[in-house]
Length: 363
Ligand SMILES: Cc1ncc(COP(=O)(O)O)c(C=O)c1O
Image (cartoon, rainbow, N blue to C red; front, side, top):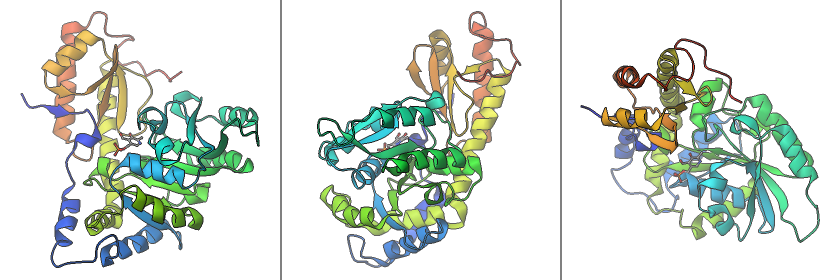
């Protein structure tokens, strides 16, 4: 039985257009460390796509590096980065920002659906003992778009949160490991979701969406960019053959490839979620992008695994399913068939609500 990959978009391969771009950059030689014509072109492409005449871009090799470097370019060692309490930068990056930031801390802010709520942000800002050296001083608001649970902030929500942060002198960062999925979902312009909404720096994810260990930091603030020249080098991210990362990122951003790949991945999740909802499976929240958290008893999860479905078990009774640019229609049909077979076996006790009823709103 063929396995179906639903663990992570990280598990997907490299998009053919991106492989082709690497091959096209291969003939001949080019200067190292970003002093090559491909990396120079990347900046022009980023300025064009994000409609920002002075934007600067720093290719790096992982999303963790992009976040940690972006955040430390905005945050002093005595500063704090405010983020949602479930944010990847807080929970899943091993304290990279604190290490590279000389001790800067991350502080979690509550909010439903894994989004920072304006009231939670305001309360966190009001509780700060500003100017007191015994306390870390909030310097950055970091929003994960989409969130680690696959929910998205609207442009208006980002703008309102950025305004609140700016009122207290904070800068604004987006962890955009999957920002293409959010942009495709919202159907907005890349500029609207970033600098026009008040974002200073963001991490542009590409690897999860078809690139080969190529991510970037996009900077709309010249001071932060000037710092990143040194910070990227000191942390080992000024790679000698940067042209191959830059070639990927150019291909990624050209002709909306990033948005087309993400739209496909979102669409496959939409199909999957519709089928599962129809079969009566309950979700933690409706999937805005390519990620779904489904309530499945452990015994049923074991049967689904035995049927060749690859997914993560997040907690007892909770699994995560993720589609990618590579997920085919057949993958979705097969997944639904295998769910149906396991459902038929284990129906009793699994269905938390009658088949066909609407997915409940998240709490
Ligand atoms: C929301 C988010 N941010 C950042 C990262 C970090 O990316 P990387 O694993 O490339 O360091 C991930 C990876 O899963 C992620 O999901």
